[in-house]
Image (spheres, rainbow, N blue to C red):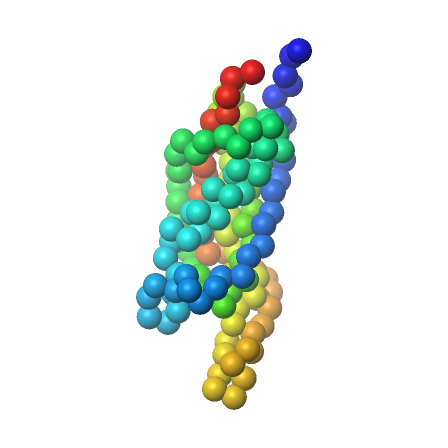
Length: 132
């Protein structure tokens, strides 16, 4: 049976609430590694959808941190398949803040939507999948 490689343009989107347990720095800031872990989750689902395998991350290129991610945020993580090699898959990755907590003493659960979403992190990742 011949395997047809996936076509560029396949997209996977995850959304996640950033728990306060992930804050590491003053101002409830979350470290950049948090976003990279989410990129790994999106890439895993993309590989499952396109190749029937979880794949393995080989590298990140062009990682840029544009804005902070804070505890209490809701983030949207998006991966778009850019190019396909024999075993490699190049994925454009974006993490954007779509909602942000802005608690006060009077309203500890106060939050607002971020419109347009605030792009916090971008990267290009390369994953590899088993040869068919």
